[in-house]
Length: 182
View 1 (cartoon, rainbow, N blue to C red):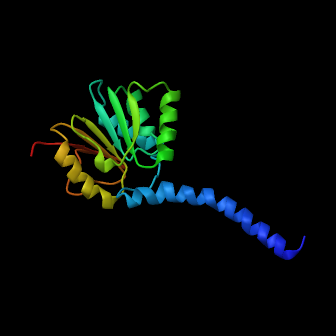
View 2: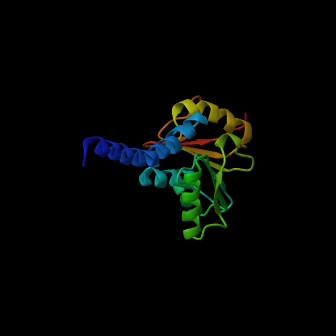
View 3: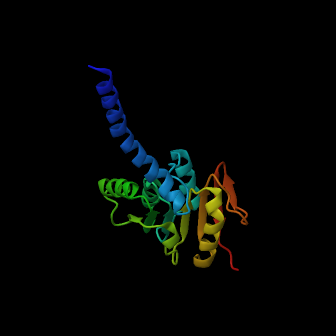
């Protein structure tokens, strides 16, 4: 094989390989950041379990995960007994993955993931909110939560504390907040 043809084939194979990799990075990292949230980084299962435990989910709870990624918290909340567990995720590939897992586990009656920005989430009547967001988004999220959540709603944040709020309880990286009257 001559050298120019080899180089052309090498470049073509690299381009074909790079396209899926580029789509991954654009979808999982840049779309959420451009939308004002954090990149997709799945919560460790230990943290998911800690978040569910601190939430003290009851059968009357309606739960939301803002930036639900692969749906692991939405599913865990449904399995913990939430009346309804809703995820908001902007990246369609993750929404499809979540919906598939929810369907495989036969949780469609109590769990769903919407392909929608968390900034457009309706948090009225929500009793538990889960977050795994980066610090620059948390201040804006705090305003969203304060404007829509009612007294007694619980907010559980993984890894990062919500600026301006003092957690009621922290367990390692997980922080629990309860909405108080203004």
